[in-house]
Image: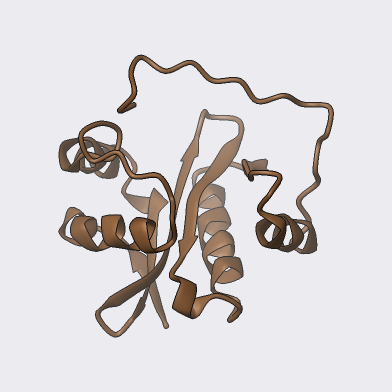
Length: 142
């Protein structure tokens, strides 16, 4: 498995991976080619993919606010689950953030996603039951 930084040339494969992994995809909004290309130009180290030959088997997107880093969209193709790929991608995202001076990492995981919650705990992440996530969107495609 080859883990490397993604480029905009990987865009179509990234969207296909998200669909196979059943992550929400908004190609006319936040996941548009133009939006992803802009994010990649601003933070090229934070788009990481895992490849089995030419197939993108997994990916992670990292971000930060200058203080805390976030690992977003950790996705693994269903055929590659259970092989430690999510853990390798999570560690790759943490390393990318550390290179930018970030030492606090956050994840957002749906409570029904027991496998991801278990992996996060195994990797040292702590569940905070006293925090409520809220969001506000400027539209359905955001």
